[in-house]
Length: 299
Image 1 (cartoon, one colour):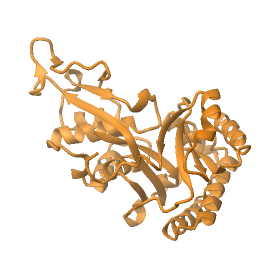
Image 2 (cartoon, helix red, strand yellow; image 1 turned 180 degrees about the vertical axis):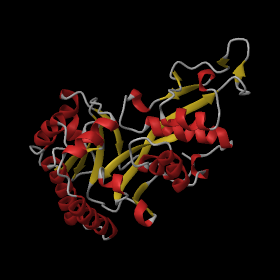
Image 3 (cartoon, helix red, strand yellow; image 1 turned 180 degrees about the horizontal axis):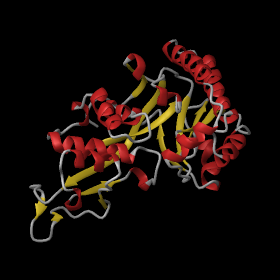
C-alpha cells in the first residue's frame, strides 16, 4: 500500500534539489509484484492465486523506473508483472511509476511496510537510473503526511496542516503530460530558480507560523511564476481563471508537470460542496484533501 502524492508547490525547483512542499493522500496504490519464483503464484496458470477485478495486470516496462531497477539487479522482467489497484482509476499525476519502483524495492528487500524504506536511499536509487525527474515523488510516498523537503540540505520536515479556517482539495483534470515533455518545456522557459526559492522560503515560514495570508500570497506568487514562465498548461489556466469567480476560493494552482494533471484549490470553509457544479461541468475528480492526508502510521 503506497500513498498518492501531489506537489503543492516547488515543482521544477525540485529538479535543482530546491525546496518543495508535498502531500501524500489516501486512497493510494495497492500493488502486487509477482514473478515465476514468487510463492503467491499458481504455477499451472502463472497467475496470482487471488481473483479481484479491481486489479489491473501490468507488464513491467523495461524503461520504467521499476523496470530499470529490476534489470540492474539481473531480474528477468519479461516474466514479471505488477497487479495494480489505482486510486479512483486515475490515469496519471498521483505517482504510479514511482509507486511501482517502491513496490519493486520492497519486493526485492522483503519489506512489508512502505515506511521501512529510507527516503533518501530510494531517491538515490531513482537518480541512479538516469531518468528525468527529481525523485521527490518517492520521498513523499514513503514518508507520507505533509512534508517540506530539500535535497540540497537533506531537509525532510513532516508537518500537520496548520490552518483551521482553510482547507484544500486536489482535483484530477484527466490531462496527462509526460515528464520528459515537461522538462523540455523547462529548458525553453525563463523559470527563475532564485525567485522560486525565495517564494518557497516564504511558504515554509507561513506554514510554520500558521500565517494564512502569507501562505496564500506565496501560493499565488508561485502560480504566477509558473504562468509567466510558460510552465502552465492552457487547460489548467482556464480552470484557474474560472475558479477566481468563487468567493470561497482563496487560491488555486496546477500541480506537477505543466500543472496539467492536478489542480489544488485552497478555500475558506469546512466543506467544498460549493465546487460540485464546477467539478461536474469540467469532468474533474476529487483525489485528495486536507481531510485524507496519509498518516505516518499504517492506514
